[in-house]
Length: 249
Image (cartoon, rainbow, N blue to C red):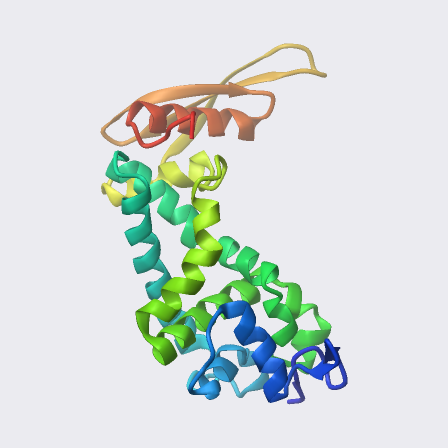
């Protein structure tokens, strides 16, 4: 299987090959850490598409697993510090939004991580450098590499630099339906069930009514100009009642 180096075989980054020591130095600058063991960073950038099936030792998959846990620890720590009056449920909603793969991919895009990925030829041609799942995984792997090379402080510096600005953003949390499902399942109440209870208004401006039911929880209703919007409103109504969601955040 052909191995495609970061930025392609002849691509230059600021006049430097991204696969060279100086190329990696450019990434280290973005991460805020100079690696004592550069092989950790190289492995964090190596996608499984360049290796044989099941080869988890040489790809970034094992680092991804570790990085996810390191990220979770530091984000949980900072949320407790940043929101001293928040209830556990509200902290959980914020936490889930910050550590999910989409947020990791957003950070990866912001620091240009896709430019440095090592991909198989097919994955590279398929646009792997821009795929959120691949970018999110690589970002977690890089966090693990930082942790293994420089300890928790190295990982914390990068995470705080990239994630702290997002903690106070009003919409930086999972959508209401996702948050409600996580809240419900964590309490052993199963998956919420949404039932359409009505529709009114003209065809060009309909208003849908939906009720959400959870075992052992008083149902709530919501309305919106689409079924999805009504479901979101119903989910948000329960989260607000249970003090998990704050509309003023």
